[in-house]
Image (tube, rainbow, N blue to C red; front, side, top):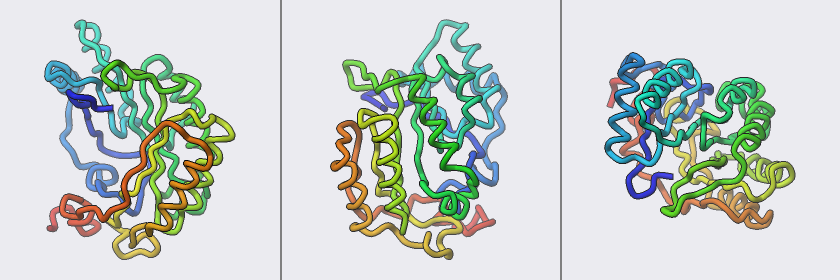
Length: 257
C-alpha cells in the first residue's frame, strides 16, 4: 500500500464506531484534532503529493465526506491527482458508498465482528455485522480484485482486515468463511495480531487481555484451510505499549501520562 515513497495518510476526527479498546479515542471519540478548512485540507493533499506519496489515504473519513470531496475536487481541478484509499472500520451505509463509486480507488475495510452482541459490547455497533458485510460487498462490486502497479503499490481493489479480538477468534473465522462463500478467496485479507487493551478496555473483561497465541492460530489456520491466497499474516508477538495513546491515557483524561 505504502510503496517506496509512502502513503499520504490523513487522519480525521470521529469514527463510525465507539470501540472500548480504541487506541486513538481522543480523536475518534472525543473529537480532538485541529480544525481545518477545506482550503487547508487541499493544501495538505498538495503537500503530500509533492513529497511523492503514492496515494491519498483517508482514515475514518465518513463524517467529513462532503468537505473531503470538495478539497479533492479543487486539487484535481489544478491538475494534481493520486489514487484515493478509503480507510474505514467497515460500519458504512451502502447508499453512501454508491455515491463514491468511481471516486474511491482502494477500500481498506474491516470485518471486526460476526455476532451483533459482540459488536454492541465492544464498539456500540448495533447492526454492525449486516452493515459491514453489505458494505464490503458494495466495495468489492465497485473495485473488484486488488490491482498493483509494477512497484507493488495498490491502484484499485478492496482489502479486508480481520483484527483477532480476545475470546472472539471464532468470529474472525466466521467472517473468513463468509468471505470465502460470498466474495471468494481471491480477496486480499490481513490477519492482525496487534490487539492490545487500551482506553476503557484496560478495566473491562474480556477486552482487558490480548488474544492468546492459540486463538490467533485458529484464525491463521482457517485462512489457510479455506484457501485464501492473497493477503498478509502478522507475526504473533507482544507489541510495545509505549506508543499507544489509549494505553497512556485514562478514560476521560486525555492529558494524563
